Length: 421
Image 1 (cartoon, rainbow, N blue to C red):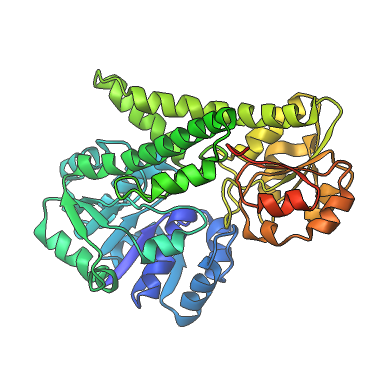
Image 2: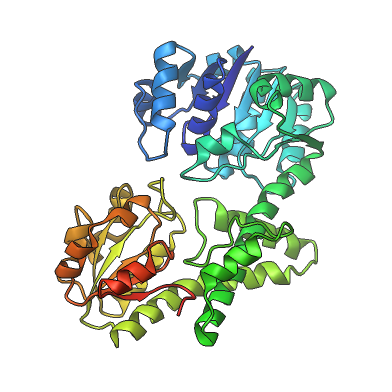
């Protein structure tokens, strides 16, 4: 069996390299030569934990190859994962692949809107193609995508084909043998599950952030509260940590797609709408916290640690850190910023409005406050004696509750967390 992965962006690269790591022969296709050429050399243009090693290992072994020729790609593959980062390309790519590969499996892995796979299936049938279309949403998270692929909570398939399910189980044999559940349903349910999962995460994050604001008014501790709630087996701890807003390259698009589907269906998703409103307001809440701590923002100098939307990725899509930086600069604050991986992306987004620094210490130098915006583990290991001497005022605002507040306060810092007194 030879597997093809259509799309050499973030999603396609993760899928192709991890499948190749199972020992399978995989070709990753993209028409953009500038995208494919570095990958063919084993070079990754973005930061994702563990991914570069997997790509290089499988390129060297010959299991992972790359192509810009859609004809040879489609004719060789018996199973094709449709995984472009841009979901607008999915239906067009499916039509082109169907015109070449008349038989086999076409797995729609990109997070598409409900109804997409059914439209693709109808279009292929009308064109005389016998490709079997399977909805196969991926539940991958930036920063831990490799772990999510290799240790998934479930494998979700939207299809009525028993043969397709058996073939896909064979592809995922290392996972199936480990006991990963395989859920088989129809296209619409599989597509809706991906957006619904994102909406539920968003609701949990927004819920705990609202409770964190309440904690600050009643002298409660939001971190302990989240622990107490998360240990309830009906709730679970994931996405229940107070802090900044949720983000990510697909999150807002998926939530808008779900909201649009509800509007078209005459359904009012009030909880989803409220969660999105809470999330949008979170950057203003963080800016207000900085202003309250410093007395004002105009003319102040603030150091920001972390620009990626979460640790272990260089993506700033939907980043609450970037939203906070914008909010601060609009209010006359001079911002110095550092991130271990996301500075090139942030430079393109923020341009000259921010002074980008080479490390955390130059970020803290002469700043009125240091704001921790992304939970990179290395920020816990900083030399805080040195940080305190560099800061103009020993103020740390921790939007992720990442640091040891008691230790920092004992060192003379004014520590401000989220939902903590």
